[in-house]
Structure formats: structure tokens, C-alpha cells
Image 1 (tube, rainbow, N blue to C red):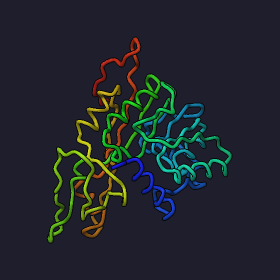
Image 2: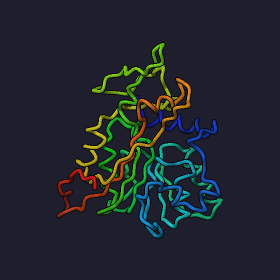
Image 3: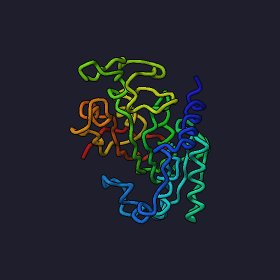
Image 4: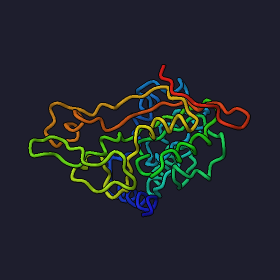
Length: 265
């Protein structure tokens, strides 16, 4: 299965269908872009003049906010239609944004040590080898560059359905290969996409092995005790769907990557 072709087509359809994933930045958000982008305080106080890669982040939202904050923005995304939203919104607002159609695990169009920040929303689930993506991100980041990303937690992707009593069932093996099958519970799955489960040793360990130091890790809160059984926020009471990570590119030494380590301050 050609995961790139299938996922690009799925996101093209999301744009055509007016998906929430294709929501462009509003005037209110553009007025305070860093406040919108950085609710955790992970970004520098200013990104003006910095080279920022919005990875797998097409759709006219993240790129526009970084451009509004004064960054030099590049977007890489598989979806032609998502990139068209970036192009349209940048032109409408008078921003210069560089766009590339491509995959996170093959950034051949980008030079080594080019970016100060790589910011990636939930998307690593769409590639079979997360460490291949990490290696490419490490390559294009400058020494001490910042990598902010969000991932689907493996247990969330293991859920398949609910019992008659409303209990959530972990029905897929943790140690699995290949794309995920279609499941009855699709609360945090995007229709028509090819997705892969990545284990913690790949999400976090792979990050460290690829030349990064992990500086922080948070779990976005998606629970609501008032939501009915079956609602995605009811599900979020039992299984956290996402994890966010802040990582720093380890400085290269003599042309090679120094041994990375796990560090949470």
C-alpha cells in the first residue's frame, strides 16, 4: 500500500469537505500568533527572523501564525489541497511562505542544518517508520534547534470498540507491524487514511536515538465527565489520545551526532 498517496488523497478530500483540519487562521488568532501557537511556553519569546519548518502542517493555520510572528516559514505537506490553503492565505495576508509537497520521512528538498524550529502537529501516525522521520528532522535542524511535535498515543490506537456496558476494549496487539485495520471505534482516526501504531520506545526512544534531547512532555487533556458514553471526550477519560513533546537538537561533534540522552528538567 502506498501510504503517501493514500494519505495525500484523504487530506485533499478533507479540504474539499471543510474538515476542522483545514481551518485557516482567523484574524483574532493572527493578532496574537505566539499566544495561540505556544500555550505551553515552549517557544522563544520571539520567533522573528527565525527559520521555521511547519512539517505535515499544511492548511493555512500554523504557517500563517508563524509568518504573522515574523518567522521565515517553510511548509512541507503531502496534500496539494492543504498547501493551496497555505498559499491562498499567505497571499491574502501578504506573507512570504515557501511550500513543498512531500513526506516527513523524505525531506530531500531541504538542506542540512537549515531550520531553527520544526513544528509538527499530529501526523507521525501516517508513516510506517517514525525514526526515519526523526532522522530527517534532525538533519534539517540546526544545532540546538527546537523540535515540537504531537503524536497519537499507542494505547489509544489499540482501542477497537466498546462493550455493551460502555467499556473501551484494547483489541489490537501492541507489538504489531503494518497499517492499522479499520475498527468500530474511530474516535481519533481520520477517515480514509493509512495509520501506523508506534510504540513508546519508538516515539520517545527513537527521538533520543536520532539526535535529540527530550526537554518536556505533556498530554493534551481530552476528558469531560459530562460527555455521554461513546463521545470522544468520554473516551478521553480513560485513554489519553495524544502526547506532546519538546525536544532539542543535540550539537553535532566532528560531523557526527554526539550521544543523545533523555532529560526532563
